[in-house]
Image (cartoon, rainbow, N blue to C red; front, top):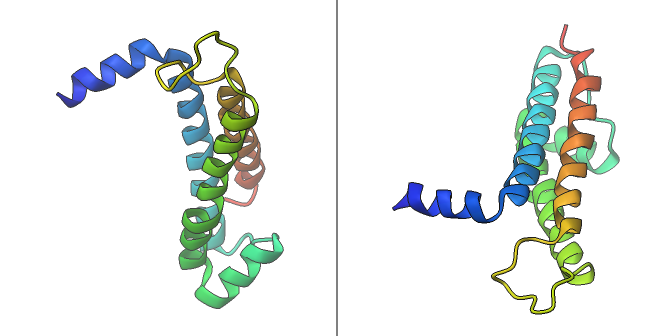
Length: 126
């Protein structure tokens, strides 16, 4: 049943899945390069809020907490606002309609920015 459901969603929303994949890959690359750079001691977190969390909990626990409790909810909150204020331009827009192009572009932009950060982080890995 799970694979049939996923095939249904991929067939129905291919552009939406591509946007989510780009976002997930970028976020994963950013997280992995940050994790390795922190572990090797070649980098520290520069964002003020994140740096305070890292100082209080340690770099790896702080990174997990920061990503899971701050960054990820902000991404989905951003998606909510994009969906709410940039609705799909359909005559009969409903929950059955594919995601709005603005939401897809939001996911793609997060993924691209995260990939840029990961490439920047790569210099601290060695």
